[in-house]
Amino acid sequence: MKKVLSVIVSLMLVVTLFACGTTTAGEETTTTTTERQPQQLVVGVPEMNGEFMSGFGNSSYDNYVRSLIYGYATYAVTPAGEIVINDTVVSNLATSTDDDGNKTYTFTIYDDLYWSDGVQITAEDFVFSVLFTASADWREVGGADTTSGEGLLGYSAYNDPEGSTSEGIYFEGVKLIDEYTFSLTIDAAELPYFYETAYVSYGPMPMHELAMGSCYIDSDETGSTLYYGFLKIANIVDVDGYRYYPTVTAGPYKFVSFVNQVVTLELDPLFKGDYKGDNATIDSVIIKRVNQTLDVDLVISGEIDLVTGVIEGSKIEAAEAAATAETNYYNRNGYGLLAMTCDFGPTQDEKVRQAIAYITDRQYVVDQVLGGYGSIVYSEYGLAQWMYQDSEEWVEDNLNTYDFSISAANALLDQTEWKYESDGTTLWDATKATSDNAYYRYNASGDRLVIKHFGTENNTVTTSLRDKFMVNMPLIGAEYTITIGTFDTLLDHYYFGFDLGEDRTYCLFNLATNFGTTYDPYYSWHSDFLNTWINSQGMDNEDLDALIVAMRETEPGDNETYLGLWRQYQALWNELIPNVPLYSNQYYDVYDSNLHGVETTPFFDWTQAIYTMYFGD
Image (cartoon, rainbow, N blue to C red; front, top):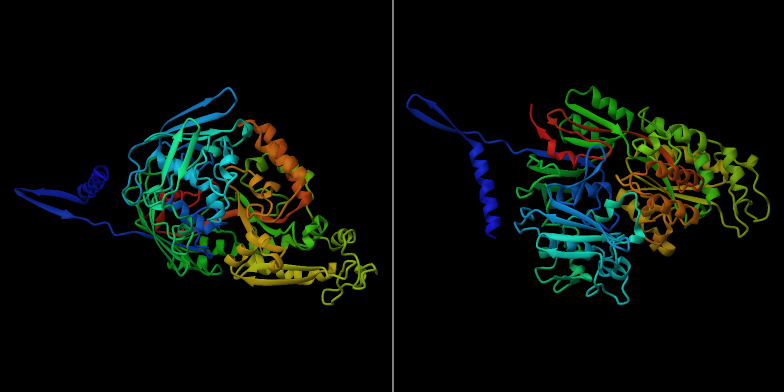
């Protein structure tokens, strides 16, 4: 506590010294005080889930909040996308490999890191972070679904113990060494891994807050285990719990509230800084839901300060023409897409998915939505990825472009169970189909081919897809329906449709995704995650699994081998087509002309650039 008070007093002293100045005129001395006006950044976003802990299928906009309130991870990402050690947190790193090939990273952290409530952060908080989030209890009681701890030695025994709890089970690859030192050991069976440091990149969790001071860690040569004491996971995930109200954190900002789709954050004076030691200066951040049709207009009029990821050409042109707004743009590390279920409904058949790809008028979507600020893509990649940039000619020469074709779609559907008229025996005849009749395809059981789409409100991608599907779906004998709802509802059906049973409804969802710095499709498409939100579309293909694993097992730095495997993966994915790739594009961040330092990149969003942002002339 003395250390905490000392830090607080020192911070107050620094502020006082910088706030006061003296001027001398003859024998008279006067003191003037200049107070800086509080600065508030207002960011407009679509609807948020209000999920502020990982493991629950958060939206990108919840992740904005998490990025601002959680910090101090062992590794950080630079604006160029390079993964580097976080020198603000780690004072020393040592690595070693034992005779069995297991690789240990031993971290020593600085002794001047503090939680937002003034309690000192120690190595125990990092070890707690791994043990808690990797536990069977967090999964079974909390309902979380995370990959935390995966790749570390002893993960399976700890994460899936013979009993119902991980309490008392020693996680071999996690060791608490002293107050400021801990180690994480990667299982030799998981090496090589192209993104090796991802296995040991962890931030702390506030053990004293989540466990109310009663939880403790036991660590010895066999590993570490967690004894829960008063740790009540049910309370953490309750509607009033830490999952929704993370009141003790360690990031540039502190969580204040989430009310009526408005998140309020305040500057945390105890936060030490980012990986370079820089700190934020804007006093508070408001992240609020705004009408996505009007978001850029709200920046231009001064009602909000920043919107990010703008893709619509008309909005971009309006922003660039306005004296009150500025823009920053970069190639997207991701793509817009029409997701299809691979384990439910007609789209379980890859030929149905291919047929839908052929009748998706992607050029119309690009024209309507992007207005020339992007391009069609043909598989799972984004324009900012180095793999794509090294493969532009290969992509054009080797991937099916699924150019719009009603006849190609019908030829595919004629090879599926949906090849009959309503009697279940007469073959369906494409010449009888028009855009406004009810001549549908059926299977032998008399079931109609019905494609159900969920789209979001105030979304030009949704409307452009809907407008064309209403015309083109009847031409391939499909009954098309669309439900328009909130983004939150879409995510519920998209991530957790596998758990809805007879209430499962939709097989199409239009949304978009951005890749992490570590591009690892294992956590999206591998069958290890069937019937979980991680592989939410239910992809199950042995050949795709094998390529995913081969990419992962490439030696770090062997870009040539990784690139070759990436190309094979993209070719197979392009054939299986679980998503119709719509576009990859330039992202435009639009902000108030009085806001400076918005230095965002494909790998470095505004929450990471917050350290350089300020208001002023």
